[in-house]
Amino acid sequence: MTEALLAAIPVYGPWVLFVATFLSCLALPIPSSLIMLAAGAFVASGDLAAGPVVLAALAGAMLGDQVGYGLGRAGGVRFWSWLTARKRSGPLALRAEAALHRRAISTVYFSRWLISALGPWVNLAAGATRLRWQRFSLASVLGETTWVALYVGLGFVFAARIEDLGATVGSVIGAVAAGAVAVVLGRALWRRRVG
Amino acid sequence: MTPRWLVPAFVLAVVLALLFSGNALRTAWRLDDPPAPVEAWMTPGYIVHSYGVDPSALAAVLKVEPGSAKGKPLAEIAKAQGVPVEPLLAAVEALRVAAP
Image (cartoon, rainbow over all chains, first blue to last red; front, side, top):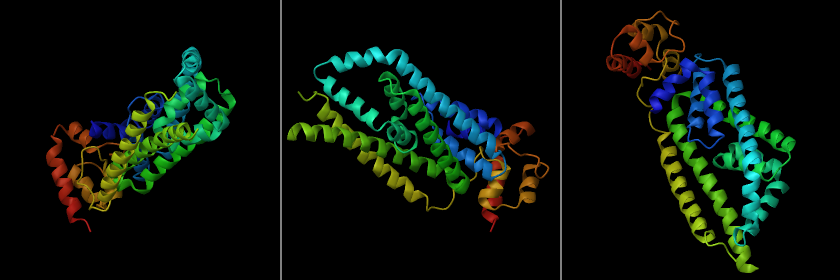
């Protein structure tokens, strides 16, 4: 599976990147970090041109963010008002909304590349809680640019080790995401115990 | 008032964070190992770039013009020549091992 995917990258180039980053912004399980590492490696080996690779990955990611935000806005607003009206989850959801809006730019920015497993959910939440589109889009563009530059750059530099690097990076991403969730939930629990 | 799912969700997140961290350390260790053998997804350009194999020697083994197989993985080259990829991989691997 991974072999066939890697073999498709020098053949179809930018298209693979566009589709992969687009779908992974919608929470589909696509190994887009490995795909971008490999694309960087094929740029280093002279098989692909850097410009189209970077632009395609960026375009897919930005479009995916906009679709996620749009879906949240279209379908999530009613779900969110239902959730915030509930007695148990309501206060927590409202506090999450307040936190998201207070640190909108940094939340969206860091969930593009550092805590990237949370990215699709931040997109939906941003749309559902009516975060301003301009703020969302600014942070999305900055974050996706960081994401693409980081992975294509790592692939370019460490071309010979992309498979091992991809496995390591995937685990680091998982650990950071689970750690971030643990910190948020831990703080909520702590505040309830103290207060 | 605390939602019922808060404690189990917290425990799950901590367990997942530990598991992923362990996995990351385990795979990071492998980055120091000697490079992996040649695989069918690699292109001639990638093999030259990553393993320091001589381009003209590689082209001769693959029976292609030097520089003509840009963007073609070994799997595609074998398919175009109507040969199985495994002997091709073995020949390129022999070349890689012999490379300085």
